[in-house]
Amino acid sequence: MDFMTAFDIGSSALSAERKQLNVTAMNLANAKTTRTPEGGPYRRKAVTLATSPVDSPFSVHMKSALDRELKGVRVMDITTDERPFKEVYDPSHPDANEEGYVLFPDINVVEEMTNMMTSSRSYEASVTSIETVKNMFNKALMLGT
Image (cartoon, rainbow, N blue to C red; front, side):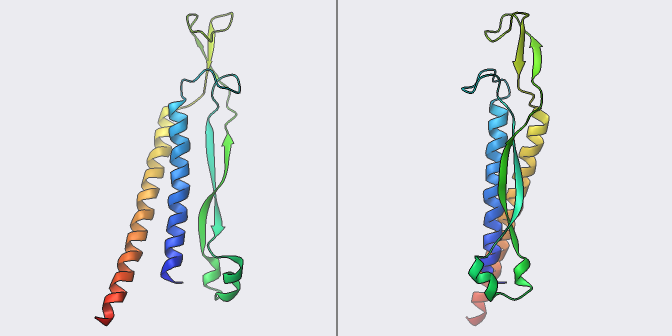
């Protein structure tokens, strides 16, 4: 494994966590949205992560067996959560039905904050691994001086 492979793995994690954080921010921003262009309340989104090969198909054939198992991470899918909406009695709301109930997205702020903290910590861990690889690379360059 070379230094650039470790950078590739770390950068794939940074990209995936950035997308996770964007989706979490979108869910928090729309926690009270009752009207969307598609009609009805906002539906919560969820990110599914999957492993992905780091190397190109050509370079896979040039690597040893130990290096072939290197995997990064990627966003496999962003799905719509199908939880039922919350019904809140508020007859003064402009989107209330005839009985006075308003449908709100079923977004748990605590769950979203937990997802945000997890993404933030994973992002920090990836940055730390990239900085460590960079420091190792710099130390290796200083061996000849």
